[in-house]
Length: 416
Image 1: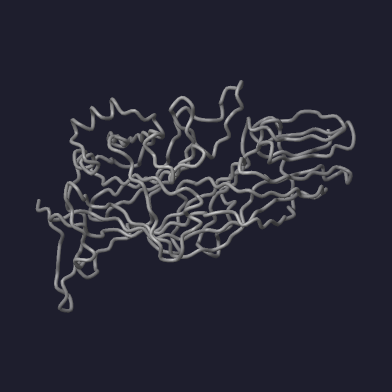
Image 2 (image 1 turned 90 degrees about the vertical axis):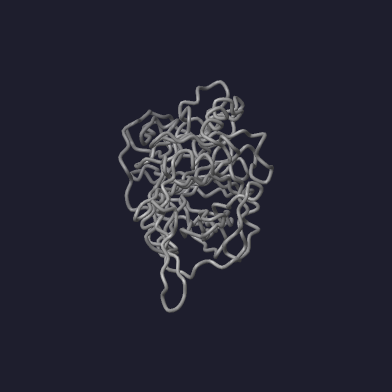
């Protein structure tokens, strides 16, 4: 097999048809990170970083071109203007292990520059390009939080307070890769010029990814719902949304080979804010939404040929940048029937513990109309984010979805 791209003459121009004829072995993947397989194995065994995330792909990754980077912290994303490049941090040597379909990623907090970590949180982006006549592109993003023991937790999950077992947080976060609809091949363009083909050497290796900001759009995201007893007009509920940076609100990420169509959900990122609102009590079943700014980013992936770097694949990513402070409520037409119940007395009942489940909706980020799908939203609880129910008598019960009401992300009040 010849390690050369196919080229042809079309219209008098030399064009590149990049079909990934090179078969990348595990050695090649590790070499991308500057290590031989033997060195990488030794480095992985003695790597100082804790196991941050692991996962299993639908296909063998040992021949894939792996790109694993950390994204800038939230404030730096908010400063980007149209056309600006996103400065990403490639993971250190020995941080990625691939074993057929399984992969593991290690992170050492002390090796991460300050501009890529915020209060212990990092945003990880992982892409595997699997070679073939039609290359397969698998990607995912995830926000992670550093733990005191050197390990990492999924930042979208609620952490139990000290003194409680962190049952809601997996021992090792699992990253689910999404296969992009179509590879987004850059295969019919003009052979890259000297300005596109970047020289490669041991001192200046081939850069594997470039991301730039294309545009920003606003959208609404669901962060909570309350369901007071509809049979009693004196039964009411409200939500208090966070008034500090301590709340956890995560938003889905979308990937595609096109700007606005064929999108698929591909992980999530957690965003922080310094504002909040106390909504009024109401007897209506209600959804609470906040306004967010979403960014569209174009990614170009590169591969090395004859000591030059050439663009091979294009990918588009929609990712939330920040909250605007805007809010609205939407009245709901029906109340679900939850069965994990506890009888309650007259008074004010509040759910604000960070021990338990988050409010989560797979289509909570209302992107339909900007792209062709809605993405997810996930909002946790704490001292700055709560549900409150005004219980008018001693004949009520609180019921939770998938858990008892003290730990559920969705809660409803009914008459007994």
